[in-house]
Length: 438
Image 1: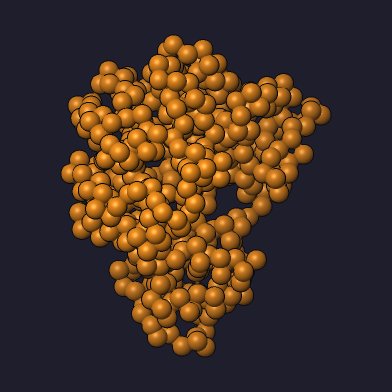
Image 2 (image 1 turned 135 degrees about the vertical axis):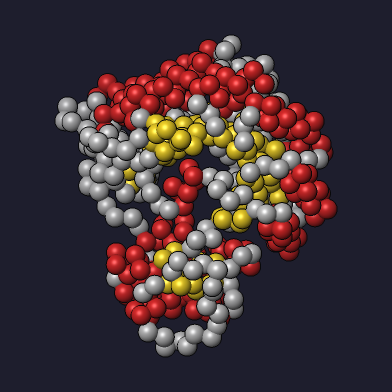
């Protein structure tokens, strides 16, 4: 049976029909786990295949694509009649650009056959510099790719080597040039701050060089030293050679200043975009909407429940085989409404914040009262912003009296964290919300 606490699931074999999703997702994530080598900060479920392996030459990759396609086809039985087609597809990893174009086309064809893919859908692939050429990306385009997320991480050779990256700075420029030649307009660059030995000047240089390449989107992630990674064996958070907490905060402020001054909108804690180029797929996550996940370690959110697939290749293969042979698919029997704490955690990551009207309607005015009681101290410190609904440019500044009619406050207002200082203390604010609302 499905075990929500462990986020795992067991497959029943009693021959009953699979449950159907109540609200069919319009987004699908496909995990492609293969990497030439594992980066030293990475704790994702990946499979290292070496520098020479590619989808066209690797039996391991070919086998995985077959199993992944079979999972997609099997899950197609859960789609309710008349469901809307997919509006976003995201190939993440790992290094999805190791796939042969024919393999990518096969996976997209499976998705289209089972769920439909809307005309104009956003179809993203993560790519590493140095793993593709012009013919490669043009073949991806022909299969349907129209958005590329490029794993740049840094513009300094020593930092790239320190992270265990396989590409060079020259590879970054070659990759971007290749994408432009192919006519890919929607390009996102990933950068990492807070790396070991990284200085504020180096971070500024990376930001400025990224801006000069004129991508439509940038993601700026602060390094988290995850357990069981190479970095966790070498470095302790808060200790040299990692930047201090104060320098890491300055790096965040610097990114916000430079990128917004260059015309990028800071629409989520770690993400910036030109108008109209916000990542549509990730917005599904932040709005707490349902989504399909396929592949090793991938997560799904269906009928109000979250669950993950096994993180090891052979375990994932066995899981898919069991699912298909028993005709029992991982759809919980009893839909449940979105969890308020999850909704808050996700929404407060964004510049949109959260509207209080739906909170009051779905969870009651008492939930709004507790929410506001918790956030008032941060509001009076200027870390939380209160806005009239539909007028995000007009913030309501303190003071609001502590005895404000909280039920009245819910009508027509939304809350968001102040940029950048509110975002910088988001973990503290969310911890207080969990304590107040759990």
